[in-house]
Length: 336
Image 1: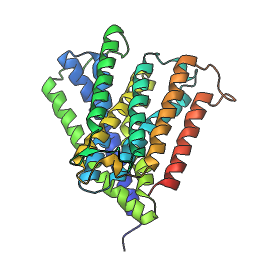
Image 2: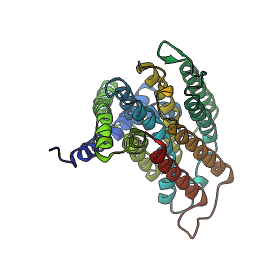
Image 3: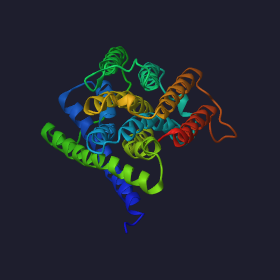
């Protein structure tokens, strides 16, 4: 008889591997940027967010190609978007001097706005399932190129904005004697650990779902999404402690944009038809929750709340937390 604790031990091991390799990816990605002389602000948005989103990428691809678990792939990507926005609550709680939203540059509204567009589009496409409008060419949805185009437009807009605004990300010195070849080697080593854990995760998720009698939609949206978001969590907390609040926010919002690109990649890899037409409509709830949470964040950037409720939590963070809990409960009830 298989030990019922074994799947949970595997999940813990995956989390530990990602927690170890995620920060290493970021550190060496930053060294590569410095040694090549590329823009720190641009590399911060692209390389940092991409590095911390590698678990979602490889988890999604392996889920749709090897494990045949499309609900885990989509649940992981959209659940990670919601989980990334939930991290704002933790950052706010760790920022005891004043609400973290008062310390964030309003330029992040651009990235958050594109997040609303991209994630909202995914939610709408999920609702088109079986409507006759979910057309495809072979097994790939006709809307997948549109998602890729939207992502590229978002990156171009962010690049143009960052070029006009300086000082969004802090500059650090590289380690003495570090060469570009060494930085790339360490980056690839850390990436290989993330890839291995990412490929393993969907199988662990299926084992947990079968053992607990849970729906794969619920497992993908909560458990797997939380695990693959560990790098974002570690990096964001580290950035906050360094006083680089905007770096933490760029990482979270940039990861959300990349997660939508991952859904497009998963659709190409999934050969049983359009991916978003093959998953539970419960994922639309997760997508629109991420849209609502992004909207709350945009309001926070414009309003910049000064006080906390009974000195513990700001009303912005409380709203984000309530939206997340609603999404988790809805995913548990509606998923399959």
